[in-house]
Length: 338
Image (cartoon, rainbow, N blue to C red; front, side):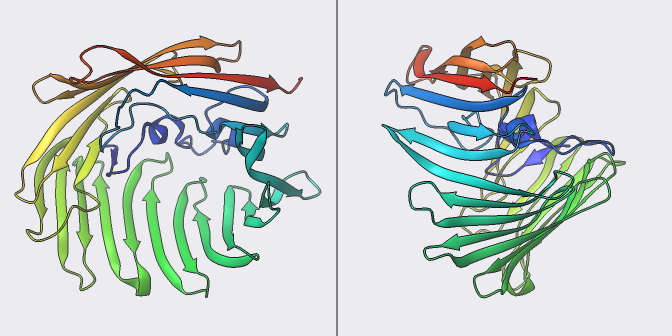
């Protein structure tokens, strides 16, 4: 079982935290899909103007997570954004470390105005508090994060500018990081959704609720296959009516469901350059009968650290009728000397 709802992404599949008790937290550079001691990256993107739209469901074109960035020797990000013309637009990040060199606080400021954007309080397993600011360094929102003994995120709580709780998400995983249950509440503690997975029966349940506690959508997956879907007849499209199951690390089965209980089933197959699945070679999306709906193909130049320095992104749709160049990306990467 590996299901992601409407806004799912290949990113989650590729860089999810290592699921084992002895796993070390991933660095910012690794989270941005870099390998090796990356010091800085500068990216140039050249679109061709071809019209192509990502459909709802798993991501086909892996995005560039950080266009113009810098990292310290520990892989922690200290600059993040994009150069436009001769000007840098983005964040400058100041790190505060304790006597042992561990980062205890991260302050992000706008590179142009110097305005405070966010403040993260860091713990040994990741950030434990995040504060977002608006103009004038006024608090806009805040979140707190809790972890289990194995380093897996167990609770995320959100607050507004006045300190009132606006949401809470609790997640349960086993010691290996495998999903077991997630429950989300909205403002005033109102139950919003619940998702569970039983590893013995291989049954997964997902349910959403309205403000009065009535079910608005529910589905059941058994053995990786959808067995039941129901949505309130008068409800608009909502979170949970488009989701994906991942029977393995190269295929996603996508379900686009409708109020009448009917679901359109399709499959996305990924191929990669290397065993760690960092650089996709292709992603092909086919309907239930095997007809190709969308496709992306990638051509790379790779450096000695297995990071790409240039890539071409080609797309295919029935309207295009052939593989068509969508975008050419190039980037200059510098590394810390060992």
